[in-house]
Length: 192
Image (cartoon, rainbow, N blue to C red; front, side):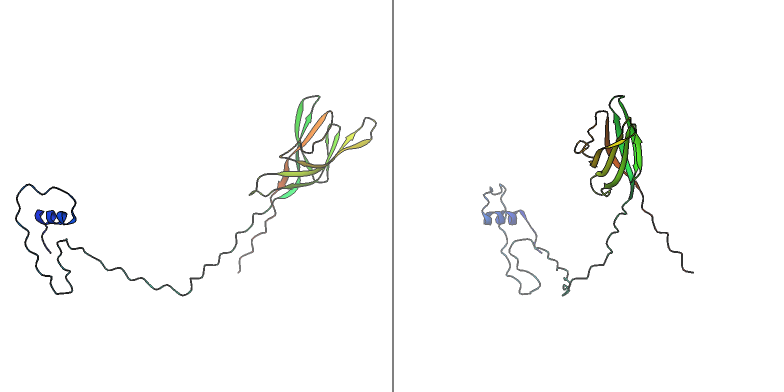
């Protein structure tokens, strides 16, 4: 290894013509470079400090076929709750009273003079945006004891005005489907 001196740095800067001023103090001329050694293990001395090089680690050869991915079972779908009825809201426009009541599927429920029968209720699974829709039959009891069908159709919880009951005294709308969790199978008994 050679020693780096101010004269060596000045000579190096002058050789690349950076345009820096020469040092103000007189310096001794740089010693003549010795002829390069003929040994292959030592690089020639060109006035530059030696650079240390490290060998790269060996790269393992890539396999011809990629490794097979581990088979994972698909995730189990969420159990869909069982619909057993409809949760409804009602408004008596004369008395200015609201009510919340439940109607089981295919069972009649009485709300003042109205007879409400929920035929079907559909709801989205929990991972989707909430929406409930119910097919409702509504009859009105007349003072003479007869009944008249006043509504039969789908009502939507997210858009109650889309297909609404048109009645001078009462409003009825779907709030949600009444659900119960699905039956889960009992665990298998342990082997004995």
